[in-house]
Image (cartoon, rainbow, N blue to C red; front, top):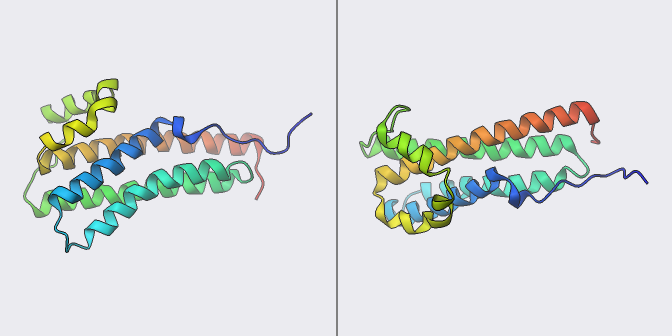
Length: 168
């Protein structure tokens, strides 16, 4: 028997989702340690970090009946990361810290390290060892990686929508 509706797999297995959880944890830690309790940025950063992971889950669930909604919500997740990235960039600028360029030696090492199982399993223990500059650049690195993964996910979603159609 052919099914009309086809649910997606578990979104918690997506690498983009797993990294978005790390970004959310890192953001909460960063706020608690480096952002003034009176700052309006607290709510903005928390909501942007939360929105990414929540929209990945919601888009995945919506895909059962609307591939179009799935694509839109995946894009909302990506847009939330862009907003959060801007908050981290602002923090660097306003506090006279450098954003590590693509060829910065510490960024090159970090980009490799965040892809390892060791980082995934131990990143929480690493956070107290990092200063504000390092935490911002870590968050930005993870945001960039997740944006890349979400771009690829949206491309696959669009291809599937064009190939299989979708209900509105």
